[in-house]
Length: 501
Ligand code: NAI
Ligand code: MG
Image (cartoon, rainbow, N blue to C red; front, side, top):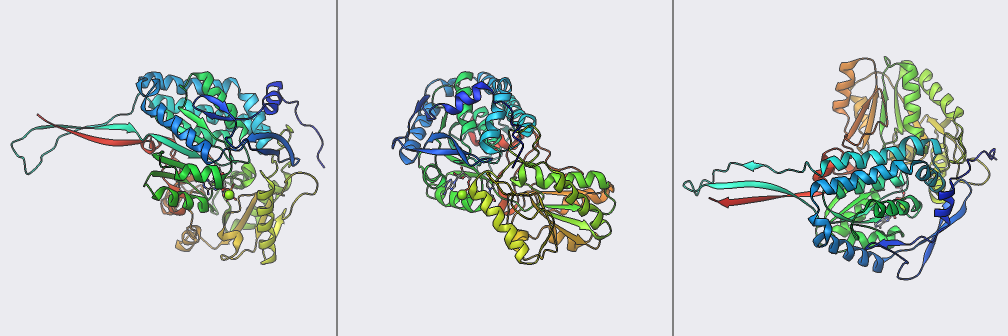
């Protein structure tokens, strides 16, 4: 189906992928206790490219114990903040040194275009570690003057300390495998926590290569443990393990709720970055070319497999045909193909399951009366390819409007003029992760940004991420903010110390 113009893989990538993939526990690479493995697929062909150790409860338990030892004793808690920061910085450097290799690995395993992995996933992951490295030396408490009404004669010296939250279980998804590992590990390491990381079963390879780089950087044994395995087994065991102090999760809202239940037993701390159904609002006075390109990439970037994808496109009636026609033209121009083809702009869905899920939504939308002005179906042949799709004539209660599709499918919805009803419709979702607004009118832009119930609002741009910008959800899109200095709060807890003088 596709011209076989795939790049010749870096020899280090083929060698790494061909190796035996084990779990990183306490500084050692070990097989799963059961000896079991599971296959990793190339989503562009459906072929198996590797076998990876299938960690489960017993491996999680060993990893948690190793992380506990590394947190309580050994070199890690004794490192100065400066030395800790230097290690985190070095990991960022190593990622950049291995940029091409990591990009190829990510593209092969996840299916994303190699040019995107090179330009976004890998540099952003490195930048996250570099940014967080600086925080290691800037974690501070306060001194506080207190009055104590029942001890008016006494004098006190009171202050706060910010201490690492402890051993953290981190469960990450497959849409940005390396970058999600970085978002999770960066602040945990900068603050002095230790970690058990469970990568997604669809895309475990870049996290395992990152584990090797973590060792090369010189992190003490047990500070980062990596257990590959399935969500219902290894993931559930990690979320429920009494030996961890906090669980950080990115993935579906459905599993986010299971994580909260699992953590409720011993009230471990929880942070969650979950699903979205983000509104992208285009006003009549927007720069049309900019808005067409921007709203198309808001949904089609990473094949729509983004929690913040701009999947509900609200467009002022007077420009609806022009804007939506433009987005449909963009959709038709997108070169869909294997991620490792340098000309590819959109790769396959990550897995057969995700492919079937997205196709199911397309069928539901079309059978409920929506119309596709671009795409609308799957591509024939090998691999999990779906057409970039623009739907019109949707109704507010359709599945394609209410539920997260997590694929390259946008629904365009006209509105008469900017009023409270538009804002109400934009906010009419259980989610609140991100939103966009497109207009040349600066006051309207900020007024709309203020009214949208979302953790991030982009004005005349979309999908702009930076290690310094906090990211997270309102409503059922999550708890807590990742990146920026908020991420330091997420991995520390405050202790008040009060001394009588
Ligand atoms: P998922 O939420 O099941 O998987 C994400 C991670 O959670 C994976 O590492 C998985 O192994 C783990 N997991 C699954 N069940 C678990 C459990 N019971 N306990 C602990 N960990 C568990 O997401 P999935 O099935 O891959 O995708 C389903 C939908 O979720 C997507 O269609 C999309 O709508 C949404 N999603 C959202 C993401 C985001 O970035 N917010 C990322 C991935 C999926
Ligand atoms: Mg799942």
